Length: 617
Image (tube, rainbow, N blue to C red):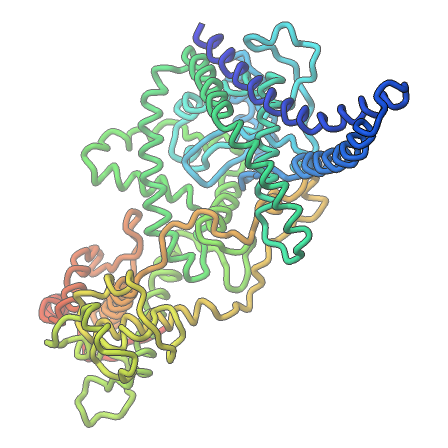
């Protein structure tokens, strides 16, 4: 009864959406119908006289204009390309066991099997309709009956949607858990096959795509005006359909959930716990581990495999996760793929594009990195590049080496130079004090006025009023810290705006290897990254990162420390094989209070020589 009720509710809402479409069509045809009646009356010598003639002269052109406008709107809606989720397609040859499992689930649920399978670099799974002509030729159609559709078997059945699976699920979940998680998703192909629901979904997607088309910037004033009218009509229809479409999707979800109750219900409860755990590990891996590599032009080529390592480490640290590691003895879902490594690499590259905006293929400035190479290729290089940038900024500010006031203007890079510059007993920087200084401050001064007047993120040498968010971020820091933070922010912004010699254009596969349109071409590359992981780092965060990098370089060059990779926290410093997790508070004390004593004590305890030169990137 639950499946029947959900399907019937979804169908009722779909009919409501289609009625809105029919009413819109009727409104468009009404002037033409009236004009036809008037013309027919004139031909039959019935509607004669000056009043009817005037009505015919007015309504006939209006009817023609309305028909042309309606045809144009319908053409835009029909030709507008619906949004397509960026995914990694998985053919049946590449994953026969996975396709077999999905078809077996569909048979048990008595619903159509998905037409294809694709992976997304995210912790989610869904069905996606890709029957639009821009998405490639539809697969062979199948006929299936669902609740409430028995009397309409003569109507054309739409092609089954594509099953999109979150790639982290395949590596972390076991086969049985993945099956339990996918059961309610696959059950949704039943309602999707209903002609009324499919037609309503096509109409709503077409309107949404038309709104996107009309919102695109254009220089031609005529096309802007025409498309503005089309967009207004499309938005009006979308607002009218919104409530019914939402309830239709809820009915579809309810029907799918009820139908899936009989398949692996007990295991699904355990599998849902793994979904939450996978999401937590995936988020930590992207923000703490992958993001530093992406910012350097390197992309980890085994992100999904890294999820397993990250979650295993989380299970070891967190008592609440005890017992999860014992699951690793069961068959992982990635065994359903013929070449898991190749699929993981493709998903990792797509994740870099979606979350960071990298190019579509490897290049001189965008190369893959293996986990075994991560400490040397990413961590060590990142620290030394940051340390080099820090000393370049100090050179530009005219900061003398730490050997004394009589030393030359430049000297070997040392940690002592940085510590001496940031050690200050002057009052903390405040936004009020910065505003009172005015724009005429000396750019080489060690006080806070430079940070207040130089807009962070602008090239060095430009001045302006600091953004209130930036004021709040630097509030409470010392003058030298605020000045150095603003200069570092400006230097990094200039580096990021410098064109790269690598070609960032999307790589298009050859026609022989891609019989369907390139999926990457069906979503807007200009909007990359589609899902940025974090907002831009603040000036305070940049200074903390650069100071930490300088300390780590000094530790590696003078105390035998090594770069390391922590699966949950990213780049880490290893001293005698042990992870140093107590550095951050001491760095913040120096930045906020100008007190280097805690950091100097820490350096002394580990045998790190701040006065010794370090090797920069």
